[in-house]
Image (cartoon, rainbow over all chains, first blue to last red; front, side, top):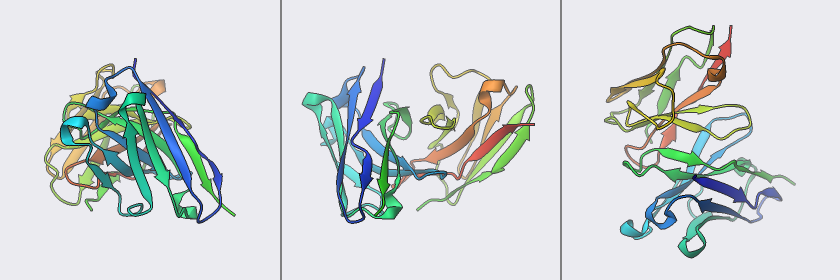
Length: 122
Length: 107
């Protein structure tokens, strides 16, 4: 059974940093593209970042709103995905979901974690 | 960025109703569209990918159609557990974007 479990969320002041983690199990982690998607309170879904698989050299994409501030990474030996978030603003307040891209065409997210809440506030 | 516009944004329906939600893309996205269901406090669940392919384990009352710029999600006979918010999402080019959501409530 595929499981994705996020951790690392919390309250942080504007300008601060936070590192989110996602522990994956139930599939061959290194074979899959992995993404972060966020949802501000009461709002819709926003894609944040993607890291591709070994076959695609672990290349990375970012949303314009986080590029230069957030860094996505993975540790295949630990089946873990990370999101380093720096220079946080109140606009980054959201539930952050780790999501696995489907292996059909990598264009949809077939499994999601339960989410971790990041609150940026003074 | 490609914009996805869902309509309606809210709909009220009864158990057993046929429900159709539309997603329009600001430019052609071939068939690179997915649909998700989200209930309050819970992560989204993939229903449909590649515009019309049913995700494993999803009931057959859900179906998707369309290509290019216009897509639909249809629930053939609404069940109590289907009351939720539905999102469309594309990944034709980066960044992938989501529609604004359609909230389906009980009439």
